[in-house]
Amino acid sequence: MAHAASFDPVRRAAAALLAAVTDEGRTLETALETVKSFQPLEGRDRAFARAIASAALRHLGRIDAVLARFMQRPLQQGAETPRAILRIGAAQILALNAAPHAAVSTAVDLANSARTAKPFARLINAVLRKVAGEGRDLFAALPAGANLPDWLFNRWRAAYGDAQAEAIAQILSQEPPLDLRAKPGADLPSEARPGPFGAGRLAPGADLTSLPGFAAGDWWVQDAAASLPALLLGDVEARSVLDLCAAPGGKTMQLAAAGARVTAVDCDEARLARLRANLERTKLNAEVVSADVLAWTPKASADAVLLDAPCTATGTLRRRPDVAWLRRPSDIEALALRQKQLLARAASFLKPGGVLVYAVCSLEPEEGEGVASPPPEGLIAHPITTEEVPNALLTPQGWLRTTPSDYGGEGGVDGFFAARFIKA
Image (cartoon, rainbow, N blue to C red; front, side, top):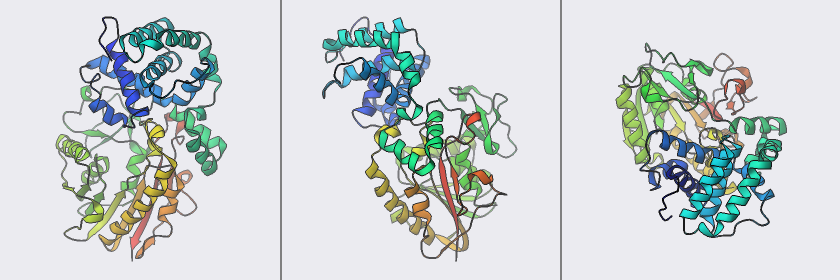
């Protein structure tokens, strides 16, 4: 984009972030670190640009449906910049309740400042004026499931039924709260209200670094449901525990805080840097290993193993709305194959009689139930009980299954599957 005196750098960055995801296939997390127009922003401007891009991704299906009503034909290949400008303009009007005049005028100014978008400035102006006038009613009339790619929402309807699939989609259309977990003996900030499974829950967008206890390392951010797999290992005090595929470290800190002797293994160096920083801030101890689990062997067998395997992450769309638009149906089969390999490898690291928990933050049955059954040779199913988690979260096989619509009245939780085994 070329410079112009009138363009808004916040909207410019938001459009670039959105295009990086939808047109270039980058994750939003990567885009936040690499998009040049986003880097100079600070404070509220930085947060607002991210909020606009996130809202556009969270509501992208319905936004595109509304835009299509006011366009004779879709923008063709090569029109990525004007399409991103249209989407962020519509996101502000439809999802963020921005003043329509401001959303339209800043979008037109942004288009006029960009060489590839300038020829579309009049179209952007006309379409967004119609969105401002008629679009909100159209947007509100569309079901929440329309926000998602058809292939993904249809999978959830088949797996969970129409009503629950729509309930999941409805929660995903809302910005999620932030969950905190405290070290033993430490207090959560008074701003945190009680959340599911012992978490403290903050309103969306809370400034974490300014809260009491952050600098002292008294607590860390961890979705309430994400804490359950580690709890299923039982009492880990003084026991050797392998946390496989561990970064960015929420479960590592949870296990270390419970007194385990933790070895955290991951092959992603950037995420491992975050894990190490989290351990340093919370003053918790764990051995950190940079390695591919399939090519690594521990020095000794472990008392317990937690495998939080790489997955499609469709259970985390509350926090990562970009995932819905980056995944493809073929990813599920490929990841399920790798998950089975990882589970068999993890089983080989375990002492006889030791406990292994397999977990994924995916809503896809192939990555959960399909991997856990049948278990690898040498592992015996160890069903989870209602004394450990509420009965509503247990499958008939004694596995854990949470969906984003669970605890929906409190803001929901991430979608997780977990199965527990004992080594024969």
